[in-house]
Image (cartoon, rainbow, N blue to C red; front, side, top):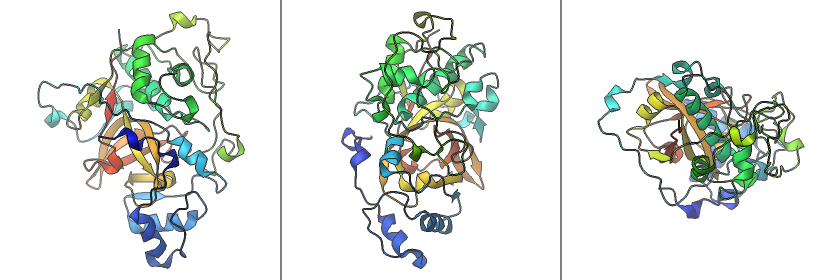
Length: 349
């Protein structure tokens, strides 16, 4: 179980043994200080990762000017020491799991499942992942009648017990906020969709992306909690726009595929190392670098490539990052502790 002592990883100086490998690997790099963290030697790192393995391709996503502080801020999820109730499955459903599954295909009436969010220059992955799963499951429960996005903005700014807004927070507490107080609708930055659209502007998580580089922005402060809908074009009052859920729960690794394929995407929280920032395509495995933080994401399916199983995951660094905003990560081996904590939420009808 992930321990709370490891949660404040924004200041960690852990050095992976693979950092030493990089220095000596085939003469690719001159000796470097292992305490370094950042994007000051990207070409050598990319070459090292791509020559070391063939499951995934590394490439240059972030500009060299992007700071260590910004990268660590992107992965600012926290995990409570106390586990949630574990989902109880009454029968063995493992054999019923298909070899591959994609929630976008099963529930085509639900556009939120395909939506890729952009948390911008803000450590809000914890709020974005929760809002994404709530939107997906609300749509699934309504048989496609509800197709709006849920407001990550309200969760991030108004749930004071959940964390520190753009400085990180707990997905589990965000789901408790959803259960007790409800969450309104809200689309992307300047989308004029829903009651409370996201207020942190997007930025590129790839050097050739369509948005301004993240390094060009000042550090984003957490927007204030609004007492009314911030979208002047939205006609439903905030109190009437709330959507509620039941108590959140954890899903064991044996049951998570059944949970996704029958009830919708789930939240996963995992360790992010430096090499993850270079992901472009393929099935990610940790190959190099120091621990950067904990990241909360949405799992929408699974599959196999050349006999290797993977989880299919949406990130929140916009569609320019990685594989059009998604990534695959090896399953069955608890890669970077990805399989230790899957979280689900029940929609209150």
